[in-house]
Length: 394
Image (tube, rainbow, N blue to C red; front, side, top):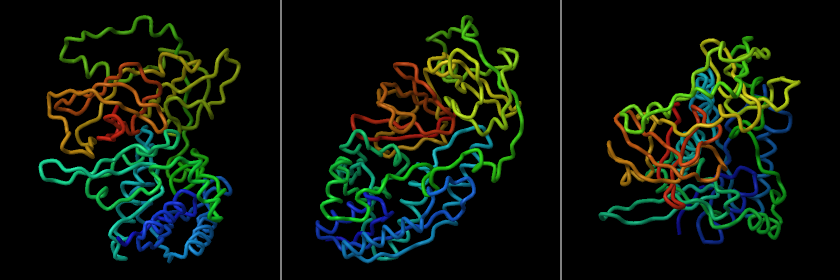
């Protein structure tokens, strides 16, 4: 059997993953990561890595496996948090959890595990890995977890073949209730521990306060776009060479397109689809952010969760942001193919066609999608296999 280093976070998922590996006969070592030390903007009780370490120690002792601790906070700040601040400053909304997996758990952490002599690293992600052979070459498939409610393949959408080769996902064939049941039978300290929430390794945060560590507050206007704005929406010719670029572009609003309805403290603190924090009252329906303009520091909102400004039919991923896990299935320029796509975690997979063009990939959905947001990741699947992903440009 193999030497496996498991990322033991102190949560129930990684605890049961460690147990399964040991039951399979592997030589298991647990490694706990410290990735964040700051507390500014973090809600009380949600960033207690020392508390998580206590749980990890109790679990390791119960399972009779060695536990080591590694501090990756410097790498985490440079490769995840600084990226996050930079994206928000541009008016984009990043997904730090996806970056954390690509840059930390399956890169910096993997390096630390290899130093310990590991053949594989393992995590408590709800996803599966399968090995196939094509053209006399091993190919690793990343598959959705069996538990549809907990599938976390989306968070691993930026992994590559080298990272997958060294990775194990022991609980991918289990449901969350089954994992809890195993932990309770073993009387693990983490059996009833709540799942972590918020930013990966930072915890649940007051986002504006957290971002204000580097991004300054700046008062600006909130403009409400009335529904009749869309009566004269432009219709694009499907046979035109500009059809895909045109339908993938978000609407650019001007202050004169709507009605002044309040003030905010910085457009970079808000994201598409956001409702909380607007402090807009006295309207027939709740207001949602439909667009932000960083240059003029303006937020545009619309009333109601079905406001037309919240929905788009297509998006663009530029060439330098495209990533294929299955490089053998990479689209060539001029090709198009049907995939199932999600542009945020836990979103049901949506039918779409991907068009590979010189400037990047256009994703055109069968149905208009709510809350497409620049900076987030769109991931595409064939059945339950994650094929590739990319950062939404617009």
